[in-house]
Image 1 (cartoon, one colour):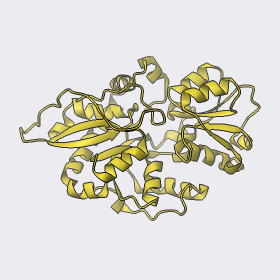
Image 2 (image 1 turned 45 degrees about the vertical axis):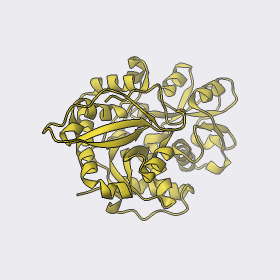
Image 3 (image 1 turned 90 degrees about the horizontal axis):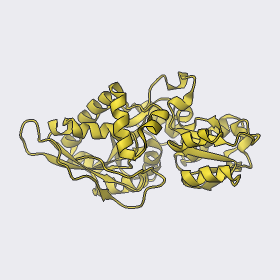
Length: 329
């Protein structure tokens, strides 16, 4: 089975679940009957590792047949996983923490994507961060604090880019509550920035590259500056599914970590996979940030994100998180 998607970014894909692909997975290595796992994804470049696990038979080695579906956005995937419509789904840690804070029982199965531990040491953060905060070159906006009273686009309210840009404004001495947030899809945001209808645009790849090519100025790289390091994208299951299908999900965990390591070691091949999955030209994928697939999820990385969300007011209080959040033997 292959992931077959149009260009599908979290903020722009249509609602609902759409089963993808029709090709068969490799047979189980030992000939045993396979167990089907229904997996939700939002169709981003990070899915290259998932595709590698399918193509190379890593799931089949675990006796698994992975059936991939497109979900509208991470909250939709979480809802499907909680209800059992999906066995597990992709979500960034921020939507997962929002759901946990609302009492949704979720278990983290594995890391999907993220940043290497030395990411902040890079001279050019745009080389590791696929998000970017752009302003017009002649805007007079020189730092995140200058965004107070300005019109700043985000793909969705209370979601990752608003959280991460808010942290930038706060760290720079500004008040995120004084920013005029505007919800625009990335393409509309880019056009609005050109037409001076907004003052800053929060963008993701490939629109970051288009913003730079149009002569706009990268004000900050909000993703890596907020998360710093570790797993950001997660494979998450409803806790009931995690209990009833523990062995199968542990098999998924082993297979995806094998694929994550392979994807990091074979970047050219992974970027070709990413181009096919997203429908982007390979040159556009290579011009963007270098992807990274972690092989673990650390509690301290999730706790750091939760603490910052609580400090910014995106969570009512910091949740008490421990190792029970994660799937384990």
